[in-house]
Image 1 (cartoon, rainbow, N blue to C red):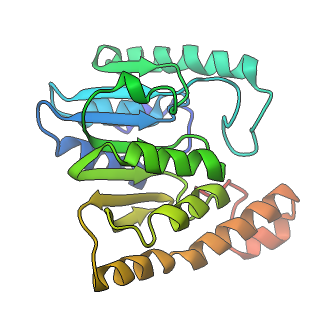
Image 2: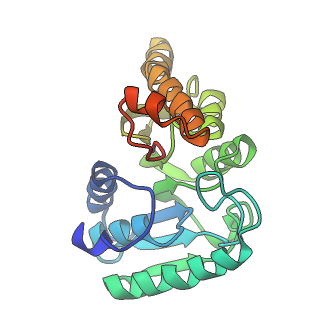
Length: 239
């Protein structure tokens, strides 16, 4: 599986790919996966390769030239069209194109295109606070009881982390399982009483790592190589 990803551009570590694989492979026929934010297909290939037959896989990405990647918020329309074409070609090359129904739409527009519950929801869409919060709340409501919610750039992106604090830290629906780098995993099950405080505390314990990532991003942006190297970074954008 990892060999098929070698030439697929994207921001996903081997450990994160392994977590996606494990959760997708646990699904059963008739279950559904929804991915928000596909870029060039790295995560979609993992999900489609791991999921058993007869698991429905829906990927959602407008490939619209905004929120394309780190520091690429607006003005990448030409690159976005290329992203879409490369995305489809990468799926074809990996042999999973026929398994995936792709919606080239914004996630808010695609809610009506997916009927019923979602057993595995993977969010790696717009990283600004408003869109990230909308994805977590509106699509999170579609996750089936016992289902899995995976969020990329958690405790790394300021907007995504703010959305976690606003919706999941003291929420009553999602139990925090853990993370692989910035890929956080939640399970939909009731969180009540003292468990809410414990659930919030386990997530808050990740905030020092978040603070380090924010500092590294500032240093990398300012090209302060000697300083970020002191913090153990080689200049790669943290994810």
